[in-house]
Length: 133
Length: 133
Image 1 (cartoon, rainbow over the protein chains, first blue to last red):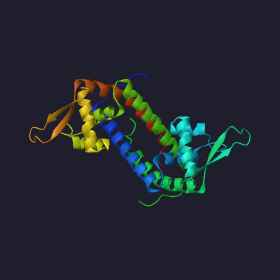
Image 2: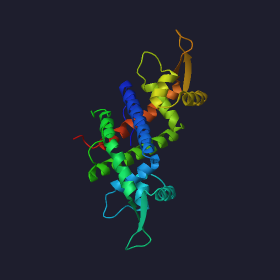
Image 3: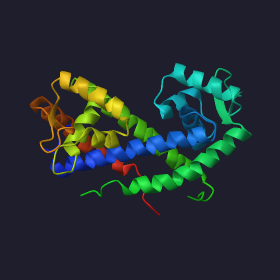
Image 4: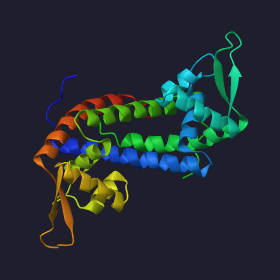
């Protein structure tokens, strides 16, 4: 990727505005997760399971991709989410080495609640993106 | 803020797509900062100084707002950036209790280099936002 043109004063202002909006959004989002009794990463795990597009529920490998996290970290995250009754494991019927992750009823409730709030907030965040030239 | 409508399967997919893109962007951005010898937070500090809109260079309070960080953390961040010759302090001429933060020549070079790369990446990230209904 070749370096772009020299940034203007307005470019710097826009980059800063974007980052500040992003930090506020992420802070807000973390607070929302905690308000319903989840850690911010548990919220992201539930969203990854719920938003997965595929014929079957996602595997640990697929969840690692969504979360941009290492396999080992995701396994620990899942362990804690299983303990909290948010998530359950199910072995693949054709290949027993493969594990799929599903939401429990509680997990479904939590991600629906959080996603309702985030859909609104995302609409607001979108407006902060400067229009393309 | 009242809860929005019940999310659809597509809503969950879009929320997940947005978060995964965001995580990849932030990971990429952190790697770029390290590649030019900065920590990710030093990069954000330089951008906050450079992107500040105002008659004079930003104060610690203004930088705390941009960085969504506490005053104490920003002071420590500035101390290390001064040690690294990226930033310098200047007392306000009218009110000596107020300190403004400026970029050094090295700081200017680093933020220009990083911002060139980020302007391109930001253009790509923008495309990932689903169009508004």
